[in-house]
Length: 285
Image (cartoon, rainbow, N blue to C red; front, side, top):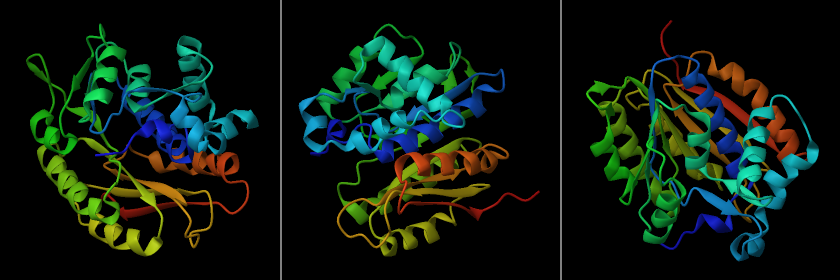
């Protein structure tokens, strides 16, 4: 695997994905009982946007930096607050990966497992969370870890609620859809009450549509498709947007997204962008 997220940290896909992730965490902690989060492709957990890798692509300029320049408050204040909290602790160019955001948003009695296969990234992740008893870092394949870590347990008490974030690099492009759907199906069968969030890139609509048709048949009570496009879908140059497939999302979560998505679109795609919110399967009642 050659992918390094440091080249892409803070880009439009990160902003979209992480804003929705924080909203999911807020829904989890609205109830007092403990919850569990599994990040299957965690990366190193923290990035510096003045690094050689980040400066080479400059993708954060059209992502998190564009959003911060707008100074828009609601409904992006939750995301903005997390970025500023990260920078207050780690410096003005820091950008939090999903493990950092999970640790920031969840509580002392919650538990988090982060999986990362690349040795260098996993070592950085372990250093980042050394001393935090809530977080377990596993250097292993994220798909395989779902079979080992689901359903979750905390001591002798089973945790009934939680979230699984699946965020693979898609180095194999469309070929990644097969293993990711297989892993998602297996995870849902092992932990049917869990929430699952699967991120995917949108480069060509013709490639994504068969994936979504298959996703509609996953063994979940409900499946919600959420997408943010930052440029017209027919552009063939690069990733035009990205999506999240949400299985078993929180009750009325579509209302939260209905206000969040337009704000993200204004910040990241002031011209030529669009967003989509569609139920692929909706729970009865």
